[in-house]
Image 1 (cartoon, rainbow, N blue to C red):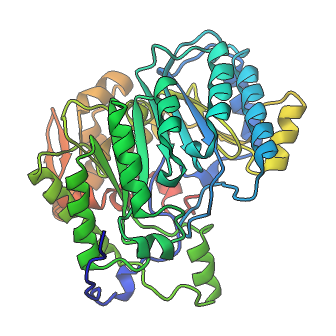
Image 2 (cartoon, rainbow, N blue to C red):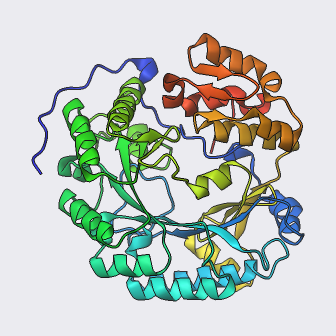
Length: 447
């Protein structure tokens, strides 16, 4: 498809620049307060006791990619051969076998499964079938409400998609990010637009229950005209759901390293925050006009009954067993992360040990804050849920931060039945959530 004509971005003011640091709030308390000591004092005791959390899900980190995107901050590898991949998948299988012997996991059905990365679709069909067969032999997931599978379009073929569908995937997520080949190249993406359209058509022909596409607003070199073209092409494709993130620059990205060193490798701009929020707002408005419905700060769906079991469960306190290098999980309310290097991860499993690196057991008050801020990402929440779960009136508990949102025009409603953000509040929700942090977490580094 032809590239859109570009117009320059507005000037970036100092206080609105996209600077290096974490923006997206994935959990609470911040990762920086988790500790190695808590693995022994909190994580392992929780795993060796009967479960006390919600429904159980499984996350699998597949850390392989054809290229490392310049904005990527996940643990990924681009230099592994087929034997390395086979060895890693064996480790993941052995890790799950360790988990399924523990009282907190043993015998529990899986409510949802999430293949994330990295690039799960990097795996061959044979590797996928062997991995799923081994994991499902320990814990079948035929009755799971949702099985999500992330894909990079350039790694997909019709045959591979058919296997993915046959393995029970209900939600296929295509990491498109942008439709411009120039921007995909500039930001280090491996795929190009022809692969996007081919993969989408092949997936549609296989009747996946839900096809999601991911976009990123404000990538290196993004322009007004190109972003509008991305919106038009998204609507023309007509996916079941669209997820739109605003470009951020955590510390361990290639772009961040370049900025911190002042090396000047990347000369194209990352849009400022006000521009990114406006672009996402324009995308939401256009998609809503086309019949979509906003489901959260990031996602729109064609059918308002569409559910995202993974986020619904994780944001509401469900359990998540996480497999693979550097993966994050939560069992019986205890947060835990795996060792974040290949060598350390493999060595731990080789010793017959869970490869945990750090953990944290939140207090009841911290759990309340966590559930409240994560559910606020949906744009609205029901205070009754917190009265039933915690015995707390959240309107009274969070009176001060809620009042500040009203003053700033970000809160539409705070009643006994509903707390709801305005659209402007929804578009900047990750910044606003910090107003609800406990005092000891306000000024600490998030990661």
